[in-house]
Image 1 (cartoon, rainbow, N blue to C red):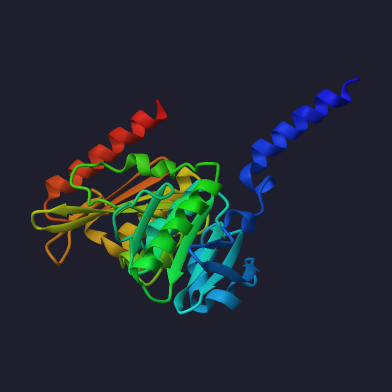
Image 2 (cartoon, rainbow, N blue to C red; image 1 turned 180 degrees about the vertical axis):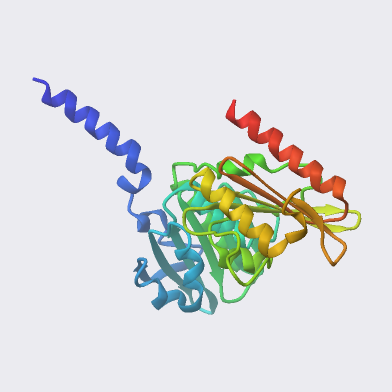
Length: 299
């Protein structure tokens, strides 16, 4: 007599854990056609075969929790072709992350974050990141690309959560849309070069946010890193100070040869670094604001 109840409970847990992936195939999220364009060529890729499709561009996706890619090409007579790349990134924070790394434009209201330029639409929603690319932009192509994007966003019924680390980023002076979320040293080097060696000891377990602040005397950069435990955070701080800021080993703050201030501090599992601060006061202020937000989050 207990089996029906257990079955209901088990199904509910399965749906909650698996979410959309347990109910909808990734290819079912992509329309078959729009405005005369028809899907003519479908391909799917996993972590091993993604190199066959992206070649040199695969590495950045593999540094996130990439699960799979569905690609569909659309053609219409005498019109540029359109390609949809739908990436299953495993979770909302990972989908947000891959979208954020190359974000440049303003949100155009598709999914949970989006941008459009010159025939390329990029957005994220739920656990998915979507890139829709036209071979050439025309007014008709742009309408088709945006309509395809809206259709996919509507088909993705769940919403994803942004990385929790973003909540620690102070808003004062923050450049809009400048927050980047990632894990690995190679991505940090692409966004802001610190050192050739991985002196901050980043790996697949670290959660990293980089944000830009526009000040009167140029830009300053805030780097937030969460390590698996306090010991790793303190070890990374010691490594960073020794290699990058030896003058600040005792105080955690020093002026570089370029005349800019750099500050670094570990609080539990969180390591905070401020680069290119025009003044010592601003660097300290950033540290204080991050610390306040961290304490509020733990309450």
